[in-house]
Image (cartoon, rainbow, N blue to C red; front, side):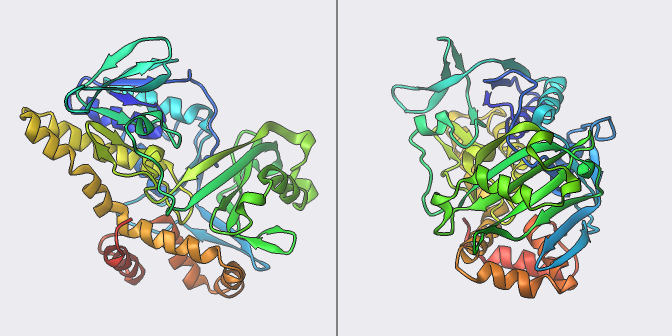
Amino acid sequence: MVVGAGPAGSATAFYLAQAGLDVLLLEKTRFPREKVCGDGLTPRAVKQLLNMGVDIDAPGWVRNKGLRVVGGGLRFELDWPQLERFPDFGLVRTRQDFDQIVAATAVKRGARLMEGVTVTGPVLDDRSGHIVGVTTKDGRMFRARVVVAADGNSTRLALGMGLHKREDRPMGVAVRTYFESPRHDDDYLETWLELWDGDTLLPGYGWVFGVGDGTANVGLGLLNTSAQFKHIDYRDLLRRWCRSMPADWGFTEDNMTAPIRGAALPMAFNRQPHYTRGLMLVGDSGGSINPFNGEGIAYAMETGEIAAEIIAKALRGTTPAQRERTLRAYPRVLKDAYGGYFTLGRWFVEALGKPGVMRFGTRHGLPHPRLMRFALKLLGNLTDRRGDASDKIINALSKVAPPA
């Protein structure tokens, strides 16, 4: 059973069904539904969609060539790197129907989707304390041999099993809205590296992502590693930032097509362990967002695939003891895959929170194209295993850093 039909839950359900297992996917809302997101997909996320057979050539998918960076008085474009492991393009698709598309792909593979089902907590075995099912708001109970929590940052299942957030992990906040704008059609995802609150340069970035339908997703993301984090009115900051943009872009209240909405970004495995007593955490429920850039969809789908592979192996004709040993390997597999890289990300965002570091980086790093191409690979986690010198440096640093 998978609780939550976002990208993490639907990817988990897809791969479980592909392995021939009977999988129930529970979603508290009904599709289509909105989610707070930048709507931009890096090549890492695109690869996951291609692996699942999602038709990204269908109407509504907008391709992009790379990242446009604005900061330090400079403006330049960085193409996505040419790699064997990942495609050389990104995508934009609003979450209004993105999650529905991925969930429908899981259903097509054989998963059973139930919408409008709000899970309220776990059902525990009296003797072992293992989760054996879930209860719902309307009084129903669903049972399963393994339960996957894909219910986001405020996961009720994880809390019901005693798994709380780690305070030594970075947290982000994203706020965004949509404007009717000529910026709706752009070959590049645009990021602004200088967010000012008066005379203070904040750790974070703003974005303008063209949606291709006459609107642009405009937002900003901030980290909790600065002293100002708790005292900032994020929505007001976004309004002020938009007012500073060129008038012909149309980022005005009159052109706004959706309210400003915000969401928390749980980063760097901020809830652990990722498996305990029959419950597996995937995506945001386990804090799988990349601290370098705030990307969550790629890691949601990847952790879902990893979880499904381990569950399928655990349930394949084994004894209860053997099954438990297999499931307990999941946290170690995640740490091997992402732990070192996420630790590098933690160090990075902690440094950005120190006064002057962000200003020094934008002033002295941006003028060097080779350094910025390296930064694009590092921040996007886009490397080949046996690639060029920059790939080898990033992979080596990720390997020697202590796991998150």
